[in-house]
Image 1 (cartoon, rainbow, N blue to C red):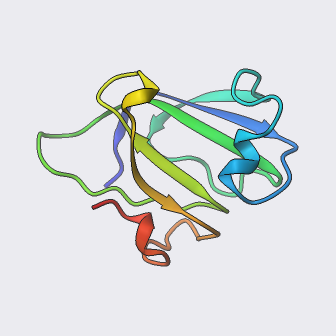
Image 2 (cartoon, helix red, strand yellow):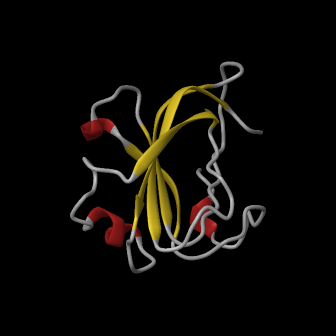
Length: 116
């Protein structure tokens, strides 16, 4: 299921070497000076965007109804998904992650890419 974003922004940072989330986190321009950004209408980034880049998506997601949900992430190289009940990063919880490359439709390559 693709979720509607209440308000989600994708920020991208070009010129990052490496393949890990730590490469993005250690990039000198991260997080305050992205190369660019765009508003998302779905909780999904674009396919075949670029090479040597990192992105951060943040915002509010709107579930279609109250209930329990499972999250799965795919990524061209590593990624992590956090969720919090508010905007304070201290309260975020890791939901799922991808330690390496997956295709956009490869949902079962790594056990940790699906939330509990």
